Length: 127
Image 1 (tube, rainbow, N blue to C red):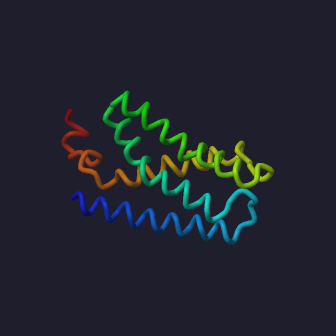
Image 2: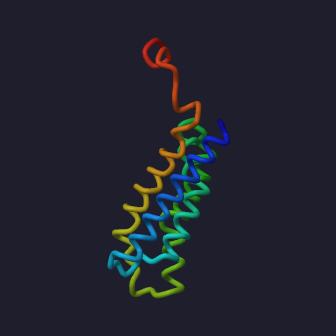
């Protein structure tokens, strides 16, 4: 099951990253380029599924620690990157919400293949 989950995560990550890079190349947003797409997607890959699992497991300490990683993936790396590259194109007010939604979506998608996320129907209806 672990290999299947890893392949699922890698394939969906590759598809998502390809879509981000395509958007960075074709759409005319000043703060969306290939480098920031790779950075933010990479940090999301490392932490999003772990945060969702920690929340599902009600592990408060781990959830709090991974929330820092989530902030870094969603806004921190964006802020640092554009602070170093060109501060005039930074649009944080509009960027963080879209990035938060994508981050949570990735975490949920990457948790689809875990055995804990698919309880038996009997457990759903006969608790």
